[in-house]
Amino acid sequence: MTITDTSRHAETSAPINSVLAQRWSPRAYIADTTIDETKLTSALEAARWSPSANNSQPWRFIVARRGTESFQKVVDALVGFNQAWAHRASVLLVAVANTKNAEGGEQPWAIYDLGQAVAHLSVQAHEDGLFVHQMAGFDPAALVSSFGLEEGFVPFTVSAIGELAAPEILEDEFLQSREVAPRERKPLTEIVVVND
Image 1 (cartoon, helix red, strand yellow):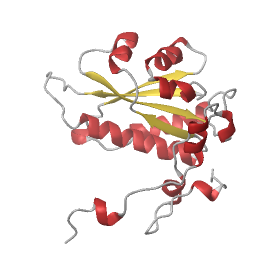
Image 2: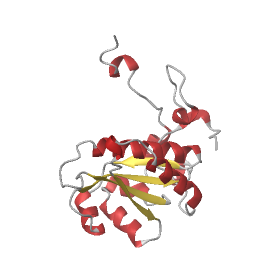
Image 3: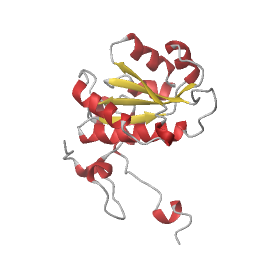
């Protein structure tokens, strides 16, 4: 699905894939829709096929649908700022890195690989008309306890996934203003430190 509202498209300094230019992270979700399971499965499949060091595939996902006990556990682990809006999403997805290999040694690249998997997931979701907002504001220990995660399995982000709603659905004026604020990124000249 192509998003037809171009007001949130990135103004890039060079051409990029249209899905990447259109992707953004809203906080306003339609609170009474259930997730399209086919689209969710496609997003998870995109994550499954992302690259990883030595094909270790260290990513694991907790998929918590709104209205379930698992969803409430994730909401309870969010910081207050994120609780104020994320409860409207259709799904809260906890991205977990398996930081230990089969012998119990460290997998220092696991978090990098998890990030790639979530990036693939978010791009596929956006292609299919779902919106993903990744969050770092949560209590990882609470999620480890709530879901009985084994040692070495580290919750690294929580993502809200769902259908986009109008900014006015957010009660907080600050959140509404963030929803329509211009999208900005540092220029390439600042992020490319060597370009020989």
